[in-house]
Length: 151
Image (cartoon, one colour):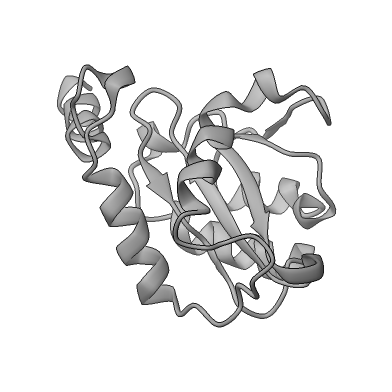
């Protein structure tokens, strides 16, 4: 997984982005009350707990302050959390591409706290049902099932 945030107007609001590297499956943690470590910690655990452990292996995160509680996240979800270098985009290509797709739904400069969780879930579902060239025109939702079936 690659994790990051897209931020809203004046960096006051945010939406978490979690993208599984091999399938491009996207999960959007809801952060309506702010992007601090406490809110991010709860939102990430809420979204990452339901998938099987197989799908929670080795997440890589940005080095933002919102992940100050990364040890709690790792302990709660029984996974090791890794961090990438702060600036090289080549280390987070999958997530950067997904964030670009998300900006079609959440334009830069807009407040992101107004979007309810069910809207974020609908956007993630739409992205997960979109065929991707990099996946041989399969959908992330199909690839994640294929990954689980192979396990």
